[in-house]
Image 1 (cartoon, rainbow, N blue to C red):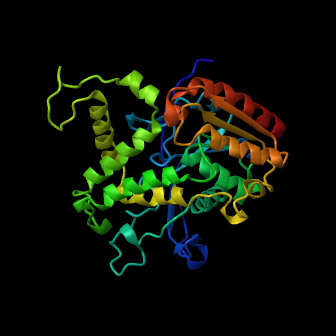
Image 2 (image 1 turned 135 degrees about the vertical axis):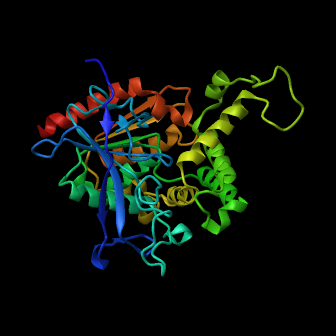
Image 3 (image 1 turned 180 degrees about the vertical axis):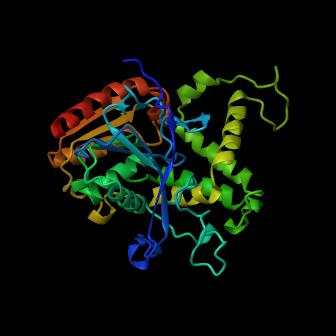
Length: 384
């Protein structure tokens, strides 16, 4: 069947926590409410509500995973090659849900949302927003699942931070998960990754326009946020992919200009990526979400033993890594696989040969489609 775009999508909102009893209790001890979750759905939920799949986004992602926003064909979903009719997550067969995480800036409650506890209701949270964790994000998604009337996901899938959420789901709500697909991810953030996040946040917080997080929308810390994005983007690539794409080619000149403006093509590329990111992402959200990633350690509550952390998980896993990913290396995925094998959990592991580094989970859609299609087919036949 010829693949095609899913077509127009209309974002939806789910709000909870309007009463004290219904607020979301966070790991930091605070309660958050009201909470809005921006989400999108694709395909149809079957009568048994057994074909639902939750896709979980990475740090800079959002709920718009596929198709285009109704009325704006330029805004294509971040994983459009994987979600749609006849694709890896086949919307002719499955009901796909993707939501923006709390702490985000694309419709879900975050630091740029109105703070109901402030004396001036028109005041936004900014840095009064509570520090959140990956587990907090998952608790909010669980509320959405109940709102949609779904008792069990056929599958959970996500790359990078999305994979962290999938792992957290498996541990926090094992009965609600039929299968898990963590891609290019880790069970806990490494010191190197924490270090990169720290430098990115320092770039933002040392931008004079950041103003302790109290910046106006027309005066955002664009320089700091752009630098944070450029630094992060380098970790998403690989040396080989950068060499193939840019080499040492010059940009806008035929020889060195002997100044400190961008001379090289790779410098211009990073500058462009930083500028684009500022247009669509919030600096405070970057601080909160990257901190949530820092705190993620699936085995932390179990004495550092990942096998014990995963001992109550009985759903089959498809764990995928990429050979050139130096941010979340194949070794990190193998730690997850080994912990599952200790528990005799059904696990399939694929390390895909790719030059694209961490970004490969967004780019290697052809091979991902083949692997994921077969895995989901087996899970779907079990519930039919």
